[in-house]
Amino acid sequence: MKIMLANPRGFCAGVKRAILIVENALKIYKKTIYVNHELVHNQHVIKQLRKKGVIFVENIEQIPDGEIIVFSAHGVSKKTQQQAIQKKLIILNATCPLVTKVHKEVSACSKRGIETILIGKKGHAEVKGIIGQYENKNGKIHLIESVKDIKQLLIKNTNKLHFVTQTTLSITQTKKIISVLKKTFPQISHPKKEDICYATTNRQKAMYNLSKTSEIILVIGSKNSSNSNSLKELGTELGVLTKLIDSVSDIRKKWIKNISCIGITAGASAPEILVQQVIQYLQKIGFSRIIEINGTKEKNFFNIPKQLLINNIV
Ligand code: 0CN
Ligand code: SF4
Image (cartoon, rainbow, N blue to C red; front, side, top):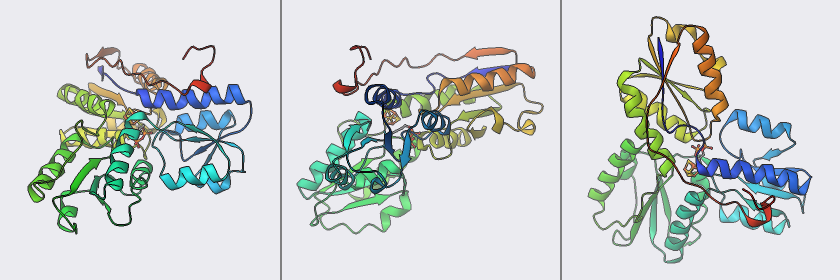
């Protein structure tokens, strides 16, 4: 009985950077660090940071004036940023640079009054932050989640229209939406480089190889993690029973009964230790062979703000 391990899997550069920002801030400031929203969407990471004294809030009004706030990897609206400034909070921005790229696009459209369509998941923190970059009252940002939402769109000037996407969506689903969007609005402009990020893309590519041999795929990631859900959806689309699990304790024996090959991957916010715990459990019950599948090598790295460098070593 064997285990197939996806590559790449787990932490992306944006998540590593966000965690390092908080950990270094704890060491440097030696006081309570507040984070707006969950720093990254992973229960294990959040639990570990809580143990170190980090306080997570959904509304920055909950933070006393003058304290330290970290903006989560998913980014915040301009309004939230303003509120933080008004409260004289010390702002440490852990927004992933690839989310900031989308913010800049939307902000530019807003300034030029170009109506913008955002493909994304309603209510998701990143989506709220992106929508919150569009402040022009004479223009509008429209959120669509699916092809059927396109029909409902009321666009003032279809010649001045742009689209962007959330960074962690399913590539296949998003392609379908974009193709209908382009047919419906032939003049629509779009980003030069795709908004779906490299980490989302590479982890989804790795699912294809994993699905070839696996009878079941375990995706390690939390329920509110968009990129982890995209992996789960893709596995299911590829015809493999795919389960999203937070940790080893979520595995049900009935899923793996009579199974000889289990695929394992992890979302961009899931730490490798959770993968290793799953492997250890499976090894104990007879999955003795581990095969690491080759995949795209990731060299992406994002710097942290200078004031958070410790001994100038990141
Ligand atoms: O799981 P994450 O924290 O976030 P989503 O996939 O839900 O967006 O992973 C990091 C991604 C970002 C931003
Ligand atoms: Fe950045 Fe992509 Fe990671 Fe999100 S999943 S933090 S956009 S690199």
